[in-house]
Length: 219
Image: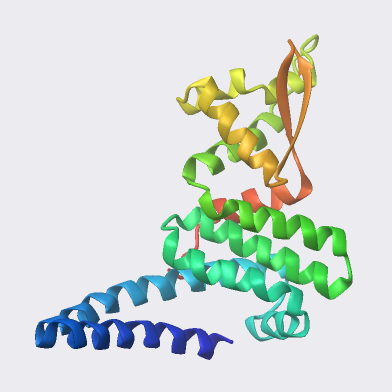
């Protein structure tokens, strides 16, 4: 699969150059030259996502590719990651999507259909995520680790009104981002603190947050 991905990238570059020459003559070859940096960035982004998938699934690249090949239901998710590597320039998002792909592969391998579906929902939702989403997710983890103040409801620490000032964001912005995260299955939403919605991390949300925060030193 890795070789196939490289072939796709080369085809993109070659096609861009060929199309440019056909339409614009020799000057059109510039399109091919411009495509090369784009392809290199696509390869880097895709590799980063796949390394996150390997870590989440606990598999080598070869074993991960074998699991994906054995479970056709995961193929559309691989395509989503491939497409997003060229469309979403945020490394955190790509690492998170890779982790979701790894979770989906592990669930498919183990026959955990519900977990597979949860990972699929998260992966598809994250295509539009930005670093702000992961700042909110990280703030939820920080809030969970805070010591509990006697007399203060535990769920209060997950209130967007408390989290927003720490991030330097408006409350309405944090509420919107948290709603996106909840829709992706990374947070659970419930009421219970002053009539406001509060949120709590899901198991998948914790894994995604860890993957997004991980510094990938392999580029």
